[in-house]
Length: 343
Image (cartoon, rainbow, N blue to C red; front, side, top):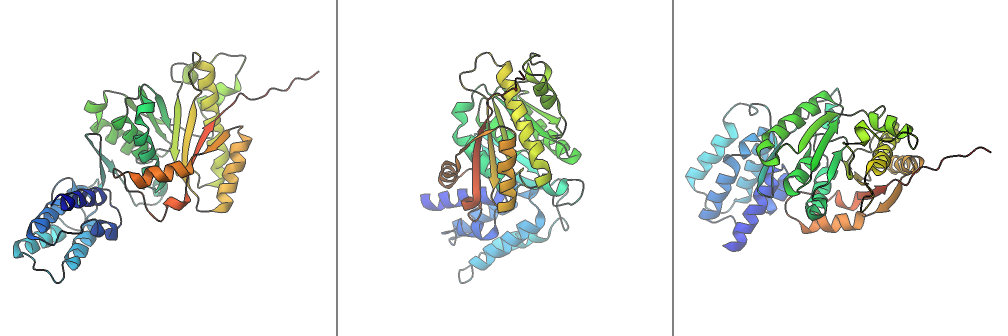
């Protein structure tokens, strides 16, 4: 019975995060008994499952029923499955999304499959996000009192997960797409009682921002504004290295944040750093990223093997098995830029 309970707990985690249907069904091994079937019924019809996309719930329900083929199925359970399959129209009232349970907090993230206006990238939860979230969860003790800035936050999993599991001083979620900023604000507001105002949401354009303007004034002008009270200890970003045209702006912004924060910090125990998680889908894009990192003067330490081990060992976040071999964690630091002296 204990092993069945563990399996169903894992199945529930995968289900609420909209993991692939076959992964959910595999996690339900041992559910054929009447008690197991009733536990599954509760998993798929109760809150917070109601906030999942209805088409996804329907696929899971049908797959679970197929997995019971050859076993006696209680008629009452069939009625419950069919009711959940058909009630409420084609989709639940918006917003729909996925749910994570992190360190005692329930985090709901609104997602979108729409296209246009940047929503096609910012509205989806891409594979690198749960991988970075798992890494942050595993290193939560190191992030006590940290000031964290997330770039290209999208639905906000990484920054909000960090805020839930670590006693960070401040977590700032940034994006440029208006719809993403709205979703981020909604998710942060839902967690406000737990997070005590430690999370903020801001628009940030990598092409032109106050961090880069502040860096341009170094070392003659002391950091103020972005580099003073708002200095950061850690920059995080996931699945942001997909557009070669933006890579230089992304890396220049990371470099600016790290250098300005270094100049503003009162002799930090360790220099500010960035954790960038990307899925290595295209060698051409990855080569462009490496070139942009070098041009921005960023030093790179590859932590990818450690990231994969962390993802494989944890159960809080679903990390797609097919993506893990391509997942890269780059730890970035920014030494001061050398200035040219003309004689």
